[in-house]
Length: 459
Ligand code: ARG
Image (cartoon, rainbow, N blue to C red; front, side):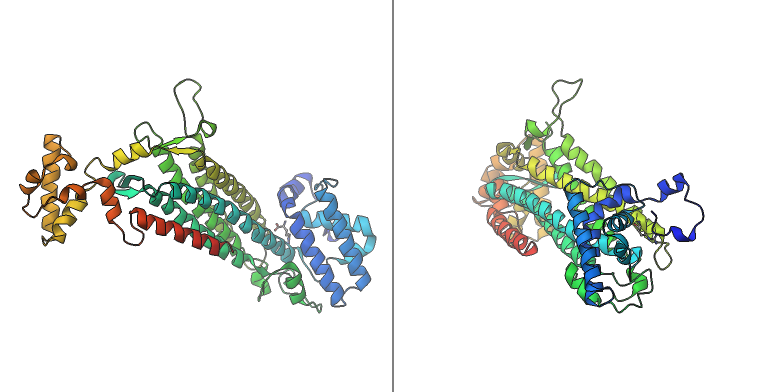
């Protein structure tokens, strides 16, 4: 039975029903819906709007429905939406008392409440998976403080860095995502129930009772806004989009670093794929697919933003479009982050290749310029002198590390014996001991700081 059919003298056309329904996807809200209804019925009883006995019968009926759904004994189907489904089954189980559940409530404040409960729980799930990913990155960082690799700008070798800082860089991004998820939780943590269809209710309800029963720390303060506010959905989708953006950057680095050309990382066969025609191929399908799914998650954010932009106050059915995008974003982020944590645990780092690469292509040129500048030569002049040394090496097929002191002195008499250790790639990385720098000691401190912040964001 429809919740609203009294006013109509014809049943809705089957295609209109099929178009209008949301049960096929909002059944994901069954637990939130029943939990919210139990709290609502309890509050109605405590406030004397329903008798204690009626309230208890409703709560019992709702509990039995929840149990049956969770035991797979009650398929969630056959109604317009999850709210109609639950209410109809309640009436079927406990009779006319069940028809009192919807007193002082509308589906508008009901669905907003259900969805907020769902989103709060979901942000905790996302946090747990992002935390596991950071733990994978931390393990890699901790194993490689003393290894070096080239750092890049413009995808050209720039300066040598501790391998640990590469992984720390991604931990920093995902820590920001955890912070955003904490914010998403707070945004969703406002209870709309009591807003009715749009104007509140004339029954003597006590909204603080319902909020407390449902674990909401705040109560909405304007019913018109409360039934139509989906900012928390947009915030959630933005947080998902940023997680995917960060993951997609990591995918790009993983794909590059596993190429034959780079050869820094090797993904285990267990997380690689082959080609149907080229027998030699080992493809990075997992990072590629994760990178690809990023577009789909961004799409959900753009879709929701577009849906809400033209909605007049208060509730409009457009808002039903807030759900599938969020459910899919949640699913994609959980899958992508989850598989990535596992894949990272199955990556081998070729530290010798990285070290070799860190010392080639003049990555310590800045160190030469700094050497001269620290000995009184203006930095711009030091830069030009170093540029000449680079050119000399390119023209003569030489490296910084195999020039003699006498050769260095032909470019500047400031050079002394110690220049030969300054141009060493590991010494270069380890000379940047500034907080957050490329040295092994800085990397150790950054990793310790990541661990501390991880613990405090996940408290
Ligand atoms: N399925 C609806 C939604 O998701 C529930 C609210 C229906 N309210 C209404 N006035 N038709 O938004």
